[in-house]
Length: 399
Image 1 (cartoon, one colour):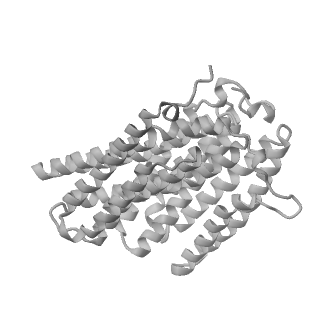
Image 2 (cartoon, rainbow, N blue to C red):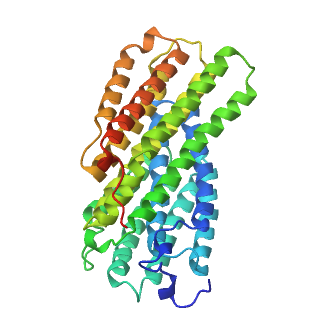
Image 3 (cartoon, helix red, strand yellow):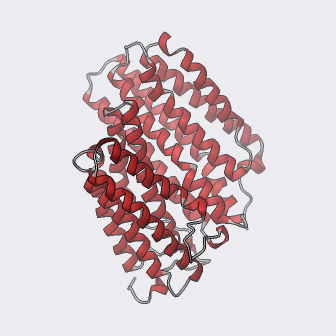
């Protein structure tokens, strides 16, 4: 566990530890339990077009800082003391970032942007140093990544100095730079650009890291529902809403974990260019999965706070929009890793679209029950279709 030469900070290739998620990584993820809670509250408190835009930007930022760290720990061994200390420093900065989310576009902008830029650039520079003499291709890649993150950091910092629409515009530009960077291969004049063949990732490790993050998000949904249920006066309607929220969350878990996670890990491990597939399946496709869960948490708040009200498009946007965005993300994720987007998900999206027509005809709690029913149908349909096709449902054994 000692520091030693940076070359010893890498995960041992071909060993069990290469794909194992360490306790330090799980500890690091705890900060993001707070982030998800803050994001859902921020969106729920400002559920307007502008509030949705700002919350969406924060979701993109939180996901980006987390997924970049997950990629880094795909190569660096968190059981090595320097790497572990790096993660602890990032945890503290992540706590500052998370605490700043409710007022990120107001008086705490400097804390949010400052923590974000520090995490992105600092972690990248650390990785450049760690890979210097042991992985020339990835060393150059992270020099390029650092250049792009410094460029976007200029826009983050400039946004702190401005207010209102100008801040939003500058931070949108910063996010656009960071999200476009992988598509351009992090191209830098004089340094060339990255090739997907250089990204020799462990599919099993990255799949498990993302799966654990989704568990965090779904766990936040369960915890939030339990907290609200404990505070409200007991009534048959509230019990019905609580059961609806719980069953809906379980259905989301089933849709993501029953087949998607295992199949993705196996496919990436066997792919000739695992970096390219991992980038599409995990770096990008998980964004709508995350956003869908957070939006569903907002929908759950509508269910608890206004169950007997007649539904309107505002409630419908959360109650139906959350599952819809979640299914879109799963379609992308599963389509990228199997080449066969599940028909059940298309049917589920069609069902949610039809429910939009019924929004003004039902109460809020009834809309929640109908949305949950759609998720249950999707989960059962996919389970039934894939368990009949055994070779598709379970990846072949390597033994």
